[in-house]
Amino acid sequence: MGRPIHATIDLAAFRHNYLLARQLAGPGRTTLAVVKADAYGHGLLPCARAIADVVDGFALLDIEEAQCLREAGFKQPIVLLEGFFRGAEVAQVARLNLSPVIHSWHQVEALSHAEPAIPMTVYLKVNTGMNRLGFAMVEVASALSRLGALPGVGEIILMTHFADADGESGIACQLDRFSRLPGQGALRSSVANSATLLRFANEVGDVVRPGIMLYGASPMPALASADDLGLWPVMSLASEVIATQDLLPGAAIGYGATFVADRPLRLGVVACGYADGYPRHAPTGTPIVVGGMRTRTLGRVSMDMLACDLTDLPNVGVGTPVVLWGPGLPADEVASAAGTISYELFCARAPRVPVSWVGPGSEA
Ligand SMILES: *Cc1c(COP(=O)(O)O)cnc(C)c1O
Image 1 (spheres, rainbow, N blue to C red):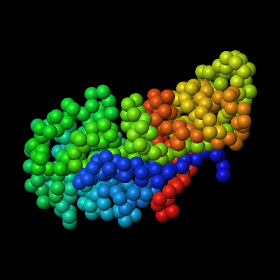
Image 2: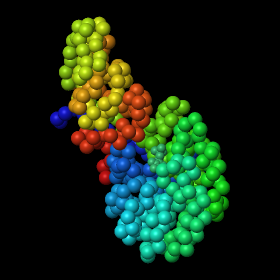
Image 3: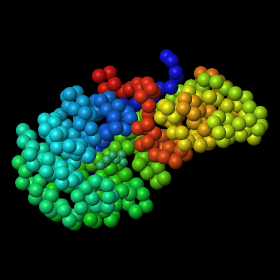
Image 4: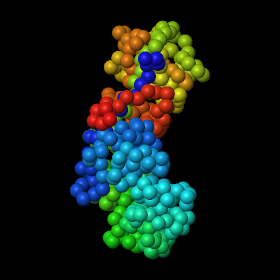
């Protein structure tokens, strides 16, 4: 057994969320499951296997992760969201039949030396306002003609990424720029992350790229909760109370003594800290579920422990189960209390936290 902290990944929920994304995208569209960063901390292969019979394709960053999918027998398209980083990688990209995003001239140059057995599908990434990766609007015509002339290049898909699909300004301005690009109409397009798919269902292009929604969190928790959106939580992070303390008024809790009891108070110490991936910035008052009941954290999160308020939970003691996030306590709520987003909580799950996968494909 050892330390009681563990994470559980509900693959039936993951599959439900993928099917919901595909249904939102609608018929005739390609729904890539974004599984970068080890499937947002949920485990690349178990997640991929849970949707193996329904998934249209995958999107990720590392060639190693793509290779892992190919070796496991996945034949679907795999998009490399940042393309390749060095010309030397092109041969491997071709051999694994991956579809790189092409966002800069050095990649076009490297492709011109490639001789893949099967012409590569490439995603031409255009900077329409995110100002991160992508060709400038004025470069698109020449990038298209250079790529179109290369024997190693098959289909070209026009792609962009929205900066504020989940926010106030939305996608209108970037979408307007995108719609004026050369190649529009003739080429398939890929523009939609989860927020775009959930908020602007008529503007999602041909190939959609949902990530966070597959893991059961909302890309825009201030506008709609995951539950409102019909998403099911996938990861739960659980532990136990390992000690209790009875405090008198005036007693301080934890490093920095940031919380001082103003009345007699019973606290529980939970085996979960920032070295497990719990956000250190979660302040006093962050929601936590102890013995099935909601309460609040107290004081600073330590490396291996955090404290919570048991004053109103009389039947709780050492060994009582604790849910840090999961069903009944959305990761979005914990993230928002800690001033971050669920994406960061999921990706931060530390290797020392054991994981079990339950549901379809977990026995594979
Ligand atoms: C990560 C990523 C996505 C998925 O975004 P979500 O907000 O998790 O849905 C889509 N497109 C690109 C280019 C990405 O890097």
